[in-house]
Amino acid sequence: MEQRYHRIGFIAFGQRGQQLAETLIQHLPEYGCPAAIADLRERPVVSPLFSFRCPEIPCFTDYRRVLEMPEIDTVVISTYEDTHLQIVKDAIEAGKAVYCEKPVVPNLEQAEELYRFVTSRDCRFQIGLNLPNFPVALKLKELLRSGTIGRIVMIRSACDVGQNFARAFLINKFSCRRGSFLTAKLTHDTDLLQHLADSYAETVWGTGDNFLWRRHGEAPMTDDTAVIAGVLHNGAMFTQTLTSCGSSYERNLEIFGTKGELRAEVHGSEIELCFSNGQRERIPAPNLSGGGHNGADLVTLRDFLDYVDSGERKPRWPERILSSVMIPMAALEKRLVETGRWYRSIIEGNENGQ
Ligand SMILES: NC(=O)c1ccc[n+]([C@@H]2O[C@H](COP(=O)([O-])OP(=O)(O)OC[C@H]3O[C@@H](n4cnc5c(N)ncnc54)[C@H](O)[C@@H]3O)[C@@H](O)[C@H]2O)c1
Image 1 (spheres, rainbow, N blue to C red):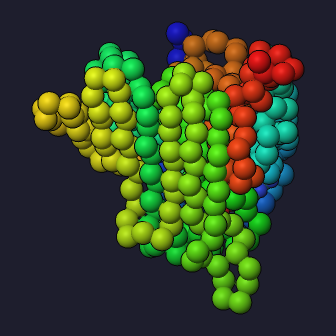
Image 2: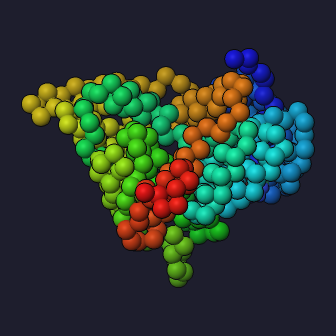
Image 3: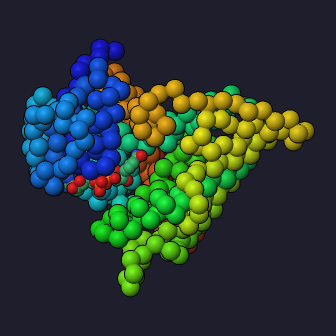
C-alpha cells in the first residue's frame, strides 16, 4: 500500500462535517487536510482550531465547485440524507473517493439506486457508520468471532438518548426539514446489531410514536420512541428499542448465545461475560484513541483513508447501503416487513428474493 497525503473536500460543514474535519486536523495530520468546504450557508461559523489551521480554505455554496478541484481526491459528505444520492453520484463521476454520512438515503428506492450505482463501476465509497468502531463494539465482535458464547440466539439492543439530548437535538433538528429521528438513530444501532450477528434482518415488525418532543401547539414532526422486533437470516431473534424520554444517553446490548451471554453499554469501557453456572467475567474494552465518539471517528476515518490508499477500486460494504436503513424504515411502516426478501432481490439480482 502506497500512502498519500489527501486533500479532502467537506461537502456540508455543519456539526458533523466540522467534527470530522477536526478529527483529521488533530488526530490524523499525516493522512491529509481539509482543502475545501461546500455549505449552503455562505459563511459557516467554524471553531478557532479550524480557522487557525485552515485560514485560507476555499468555501463554496455549490458542492460541484469542490468536485471540480483536481487536487481534491476525497470528499466527506455530511449533508442530510435527502441530498446524498445525487452528491455521491456526482462525486464518484468526478473521480473522488467518497465517505458519506448515515442515514445514507431517505428511502428504500434510493437505497436500491445507490447500491446499483456504486456496484456497477470502479469507485471508492464507504458510509460513515462508526458504531462498530467503538472500543466496546470492536471487542464484542472479537469475542463473538472466537465463539466465546457459541451461536447467537438472541440480541436485545436498547438505545436510550435521554431527555437532555432529546430536548437539545430532537426539537431543534427534527422540527425543521429533517428526516425521521428513528432512522437517524437506529441506522447506527441496527447496523451494529447485524454486523455483530454477521447476518441481516429477514423479517421485521416495528412501530413508533411521539410522546414528548414537539413544539408547543404544533403536530410532532417525528417519532421519538420506537420498538422493533425481528428475526435475522441466520435464525437469531432481535429486539431494538429507542426512547427519548429517559434519564441518560446509553446503548445497552445483551447478546445471548448457546454457551453464554455478553452484556455491554456501547459507550462504556468494559463487557460482562456471564455463564449459566454463575461464572462472570469483566472484559476491558478501553478507549485508547482520541477524538469524537469514543475514538470511533478516528478509527473509522483512518481506516477509510487506508482503504483509499490500498488502490482497491470497489465500494466498501455496499450491502450496508441496504441493511443499515431497512430495519428502521420497516418500523416506520408500522407493519410486518420481509426485509430479507427485498435485500436478496437486490444483492443476488433475484426478483423474488427467495
Ligand atoms: N456518524 C455519526 O456519528 C454522525 C453524528 C452526527 C451526525 N451525523 C449525520 O451527519 C449529517 C449532518 O448532521 P449535522 O449534525 O452535521 O447537521 P447540521 O444541521 O449541523 O449540518 C448540516 C449542514 O449541511 C448543510 N447542507 C445541507 N444541504 C446542503 C447542500 N446541498 N450542499 C451543501 N451543504 C448543505 C447545511 O447548511 C448545514 O451546515 C446527518 O445525516 C447526520 O445523521 C452522523
